Length: 467
Image (cartoon, rainbow, N blue to C red; front, top):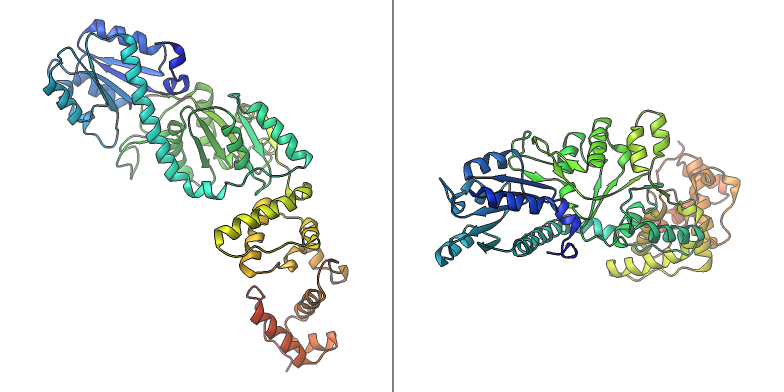
């Protein structure tokens, strides 16, 4: 089999156990497979093979049907184990139909007659491993469908910072180098990670994991997998996300949240390119590209002894710093129109048109939540049927009654905002607010009631009055 037909990443991350009572066949397959696969073990009997299998999980079992003691088809511990499933290729020198039927009934992935050429065996192995990879990808697709819907926003913008970012992504995406993505919350760090994977040409899946959303006690098992009985509640063995990402990209979001003890284990996995499932004594080779993201400055975290310096240097091959939305306001109109079209379609409601003054008001806002905040704001506009422009006054301006109002606001919006500010300054006392505003108390009451009836987002007003 030529090297061009082999998927290098898929092979290096796979583990294989060969079971045959002929020492020559064991030696032949071990030498051939070790050139391409991460872990290859051999055994001369089912009993010995089961001892090895209990210590280490194997992706593939290549088993001779005729063996001393028990035949390969009678290896029930492996064939009937729902918790540590391995694909099986049976070998036999006897071309009997009944044997082939038995092999298929116990779940054989393939069946090869002896003698065979090495190319035949390698083709069978690759077919099995690719089917296994497809099953993993289907699992991840089901697991990530909700997250995908949340992160399907394309990378939009014509600002210089976005153009530079896109150029760097195209340049570094095909490389295996680790990339650290820094930026405030809501700037689109996962979007950049997905773009790096999509342009990488890697055949494996993109596997995201939020390091801050998983309890420290379960994080190691989530990343590296675990054996049955490794801890309370581990009623079956499970592969980790490193394994599911084989040949692809593992995205470690909010990596600054990793506890120090887990940082040491992650560093070893990255340097050795192996993982050890919780409860296992054996290490499994892994071949993944690592992308990491954080809303913290990891260099500052290192100085504060909250993050390991050696892990930081291992991840910091290349750092991409995402600009906050306030530093790329020229991209805001394009983003606003995109979210308006998409969300109105998703919600089944008409889009809210933006005037030039509306966009200017949005561009003057600081957007501390960045693109995520903008998306939520546009969704709120569509639900309400209008733009709640009072939300676009930043807190520091809101505290200064003499700061004025945006010139784009209509007169009725200015009146509403001013009345609510005065009422708030009077701590909800309507009579005092009416006197300060120079209007009758009944006039103030009438306006407040009308706002409550027409705007479901209006604040609940306290009915405080003077004695």
